[in-house]
Length: 326
Image (cartoon, rainbow, N blue to C red; front, side, top):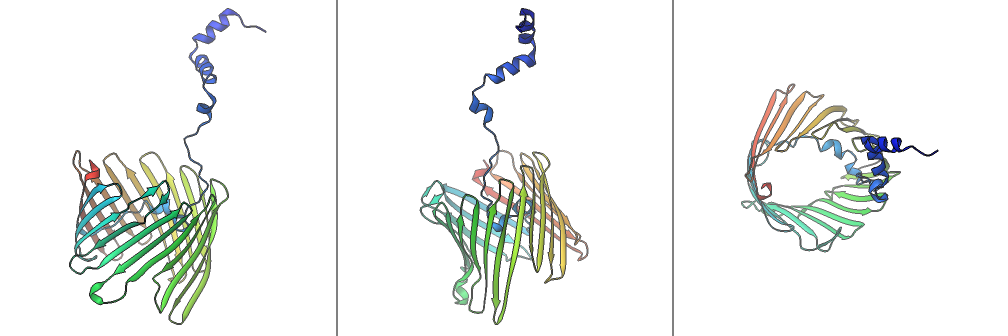
């Protein structure tokens, strides 16, 4: 049945009818392209709870003065001065150096270090990705005044596939003790990931071997992760309420320590400041506030933590001098 001239006139004058006709005239690629990435690689086993733990405040106590300067691409120098009753007081200098990179392949390793000029105690970190699927990391501590050999804090070798990530880690290997883990994480689809971890550790003549399983279900605005073994159990939840507020909660139980702790976290993002806070079942309450000063390469931070049962209070203040803040 053909339409009358009046019907065609009414359809062209109605805003909805006009938009529908124009929408069907769009090129097909502009209609089907989505703004959400559906990557199938699940990431690292240790990052299963990362979305929740990223909300946790980064506590600091006393006074900190930090300065950093970018000399070129992948070349950064840093200096910091710390005055505290808890962490070592003193001055440290450091840098991050890297020469060549092609896409996701590091043709030369990334070197990051910091040194105490007085004692020459140093922390060194190396990251090398010779191929897109292979990554090696090493963290070393040096204490020249004790005339001891370098202490290897962490060694890891990771293989990253399309749907899987396999990591072998070694923690603080010495003649008397060591801790080794082998984990494998696989994606079933873009929402569900699951895997397992094998742990073997020894101290002198005592050995321990156990296995842990893990799973994570994640969407764009929420994530639920679970890790469980014979001696421990971790459960975390993360949710993005809106563009400026994120909340999360975690429950950690340890049979070896005979203790369980539940915590609630939040993070508020503003154009010029970031607020992170928590309160847990141990009656610890606190928050950190970081703000960038307008039109100045200066950032300031405040940290407050109060534990009611222990009747303790920690307060910290820091200043960050960073040319990137401009």
